[in-house]
Image (cartoon, rainbow, N blue to C red; front, side):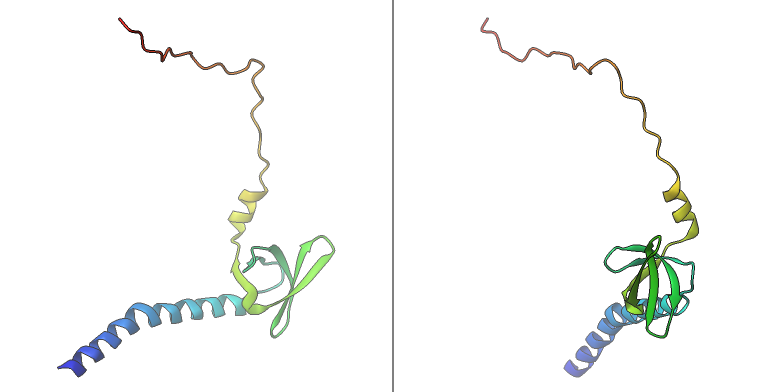
Length: 114
C-alpha cells in the first residue's frame, strides 16, 4: 500500500510539473528554430531587436540602424507579432493642457462645539 501511494505521488508530480515544463521547452525550441531574417524579437533581457542573420547557435540582431549584436539562440525569449509592432509604432497624441489650473472644492472639516 505505501509503495502504491509513493508511485501515485510521483505520477501526479510528473503530470503537474514535468509535462508542462517539457511542453514549454518544445515550444521555445520550435520558435527559436523558426527564426529568420526580418523577425522582430525580444531577448530574455528585454531587448527589442530585428533578426538580421541566423547561424547554427548564434542569431545576429539589429538593435538600432547600423548597430548589430550577436546572441545565442536560447537568449531569444519570443517573437513579436507584426500587429503588435504596428500598434507600438502608432504615434501617441497628447491632449492639450488646460489653460486654467484645476481647483478642487474646499470641504470644511472642522468640528464645531455647539
